[in-house]
Length: 106
Image 1: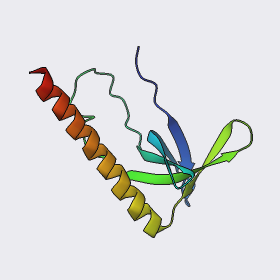
Image 2 (image 1 turned 90 degrees about the vertical axis):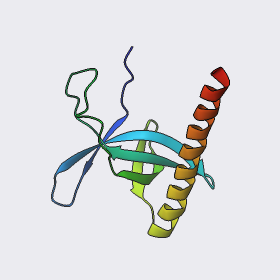
Image 3 (image 1 turned 135 degrees about the vertical axis):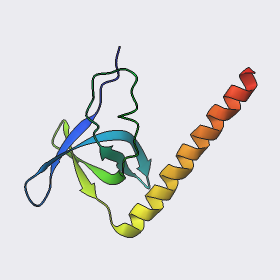
């Protein structure tokens, strides 16, 4: 079964739609945040190099709206820098854990 993407559509100041993929959700100081990146268009091939490029990532605060909806709100630059540091440290910790697990299997 293929993983379903968590996609969110935003509209910029010019009225253009931008589709973002939610890569992860996390909590910090009682608030929920989302790590997002521009969604990649699927070329339809299982193994290709065209989809393996770097994407810019964004962090937004998740605010519940109504019963089953949420709004994504940009965060201030100072907080964004702190959250980026947290996300990067978490990603590097996961990479280190995976490398350690691979070494253990050998």
